[in-house]
Length: 110
Image 1 (cartoon, rainbow, N blue to C red):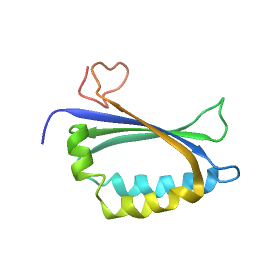
Image 2: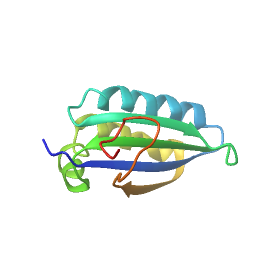
Image 3: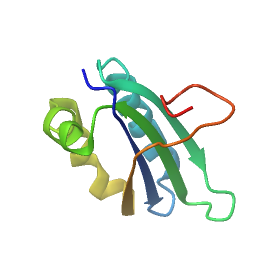
Image 4: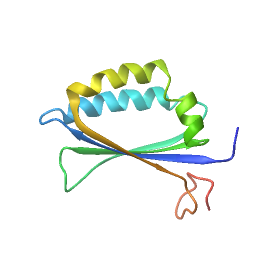
């Protein structure tokens, strides 16, 4: 396994009245993906200024290409993706590569 890491910062805007239902679906996804060999961590946060928004910050061993080739194709992700149309209005994804870290040792960039 490569020593590289990739992080996904994903912002979701839930449909009105659907945030808690979406949070449950997202939590189920995280439970599944947390058993993957390349998984390092995930943090879900509420945006204090955008009450319908949830943000997940994931750290994975590997690269964007390896994540897309190995993780995105998992059957449980297909099921999850199928629920999103009823629960969210929008999703934006930022792909990040850690290069320095303070205060924890989640990444290998310290």
